[in-house]
Length: 228
Image (cartoon, rainbow, N blue to C red):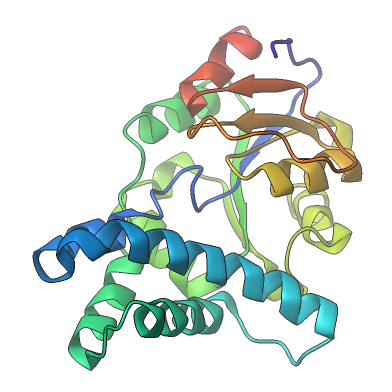
């Protein structure tokens, strides 16, 4: 799936899985986890996302992404027979310092040099995102870091994508939104953003309203779409 983008004034990125490697925390604890590192990382991520959707559907009281991330980790550790509070604390701390994908800093810098606004729009709590951006040394490459904390609801609620429109002061059709998560791609496209799917993991497209304009393997693939 290839196309070109036109009329773009801002490029907005999902954080987890798009700019930051969500498997990095478990991998860094492989010295303790051993062959459970991969399964823990996958199950942790799955429950983290499921809890955002389910809490929203239930109309449950707001719990930010840090709290949901802890709940997901607790589930994954129990499911894998891991009872270790020291390990839990280490994994949560590592999640604040996830590795950025290697192309992220350069691509963001080139976008800013071209005069485009750059931002993150994420389910992550404000504190989590600040820590991750600082650890990855991306502060100077981003104009804004937007958290759904502002609206206290998770993606794919339309109010989350409206944050980018309002805070960047750019109309929806002039925003290029990039995510590695197919459900997020669908939500943003249905809202009206120009969406590029960063399909790092070769996943299958969701059967949901909203389709991306283009599909790329990593965010460096955005540059030719913008003719940069």
